[in-house]
Length: 256
Image 1 (cartoon, rainbow, N blue to C red):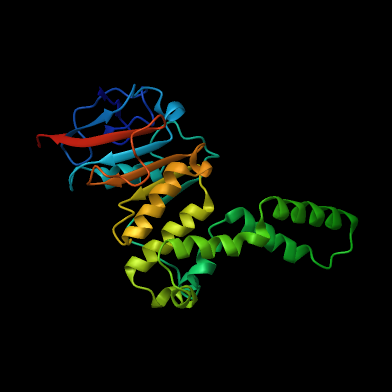
Image 2: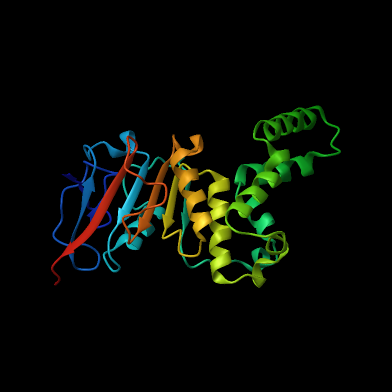
């Protein structure tokens, strides 16, 4: 067991930015907090480790830490890195409320969505420059497997418990738990550089939890990406101790 480094930007320990930050006196909530790492050397974590399980009892600052990671208030994130944060409160715009879960998840792939919009704008153009750009756009859409995207989304939602009936409903007709499942599917579909999951199993069936664990821990998609999963339980989905996983235990010591 090695103690992780303290991140002065968020007032908590975090191996994602170690060893840059010295320890301050207290964290954001006025408590002195620490994270103990269970595994090998905690230093250089963003280069060595890909999956993090952040464990601790309620009120220890796990969700606060994740929010600060999502807001990029931690040093070490490149500006070009994409970050997707899934939490328990899903807020949608009026337009998003009218989408089906399939449409909502498809929209999470920003590159595909922008390419399709550009393709539609260029359709029918006769200029040589426009035709060349259209060919480039269509080539990129083929490269990212755009035509198979909806099939992949249906598979994701099915693994997370969506029946055909639920996939056809509007987001406004779904309860909070189903909205969280949709947000989780959107995050997995988007394949961000940094995936942040706050208690992702709260609304999942056992089968869905088992599938999510396999997806995060064995899929090649996440081998080159960072995944941080918050849990109050030591059994963190997708974060079994291994060569590319580190379990972090968040604790607080005293109060002001």
